[in-house]
Image 1: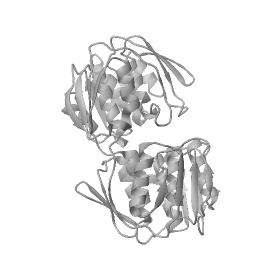
Image 2 (image 1 turned 90 degrees about the vertical axis):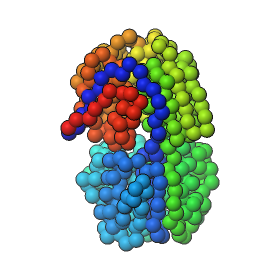
Image 3 (image 1 turned 120 degrees about the vertical axis):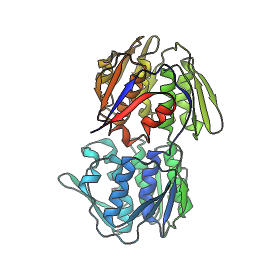
Length: 416
């Protein structure tokens, strides 16, 4: 296993280029299985989740090959309908393969993704959508099997605007018979990117980016080339690092509109924010104010930035209130931040953070992707040395994380 060793950075400076969005690339890779011919994707981040998705497609009979920074995907002749347990259970987005397999094969058996229990809200919404489209769902011990001779368009109302469920239903209905309407759909930028890709392929989709998406099924989809949008969470993470280290940094190759909620909070804190067409620059003063955040579906404050902002608020002036409304168990990083001297109290889904002048380096463990990133950011401002274990969680979502931070002046190394 690998770990990061992080020492205090007096100040970061410079610019960092943002990679393609993992959360956009994964559903688009899955949707590529519907194309006739070879799909070419650009700006795909080289991450473990991406490699695992490609590995599953290869096991099912498809081809995923890298050529420099391009990912080439084709799925001509499926050889099995059973997804491999050892890969599926490593990440939740593997569930996105159900839709293309239903269309191409008519059935699929897939283990519960990422060890997630069946009662979890996101999976329930996926299954609700597939059932409404005409699939028969069987739940076994640790796996789900879906079958459908054909899928038929219908009206689906999501109890919660789940990104994954919206994506899976979009992929499943793009070649279903008739019209599908998704009400209370997710509006995240990744939804719009998937819709743009499907439309390029020949799909008929209207309303992506709003809470009502209308899809008219088509009989075939052609292979195309497509560039993945920038990763808004990666951009927000580096900007937060810059704020914590009282720095002047720029993130490049971003879509500023996608990180408006994060920039708005920076402005509330007294941070100077400069927005250009495809870059964002922040200049952080020696002291900055606290702020309150409440995570919400897009365009609200993203839950994937909550952990990083918890670290940020731990060194801000004053007391901050952080309310997590999207996921019920997303404060796993707080005990580790407390080991470093952060003053945080948790009451249910609310964290009260009293800012402190000094954090202290400690041995900590990344329990999840974004929580792990928050520990790295805390290590950048902590006195002494911070040792972060289980960084495989972090590397699921950040491409060349240590290298990019070092390019800004951070003192961080990876050791085995």
